[in-house]
Image 1 (spheres, rainbow, N blue to C red):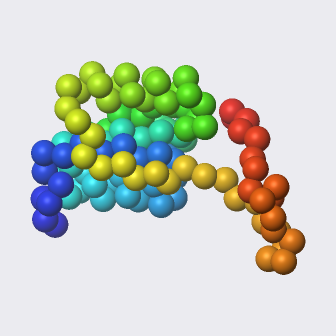
Image 2 (image 1 turned 180 degrees about the vertical axis):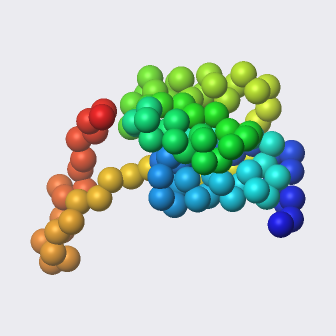
Length: 113
């Protein structure tokens, strides 16, 4: 595998499962110096860190919370390096028939689990 991300720092929101976890793993495989992943559940984040194996820091939090984003920023800042890549992957889904979706359907209430 190439090392095209050598020397880079990334932040992957929603990086504890699914597409976010797969992306964080691939970044490390491709030579990323360090990847910061976020997620709301500590147990899932711990499992993701174990799967990725190296060059990863998990920061528990909800990206909809400004104080949690501040904690993420503080963790990244400790590396004294700029962020090269942000993979904004965190999100929630509400399922509804296509014709019934309106602006109000797009509003979510964030709950920490």
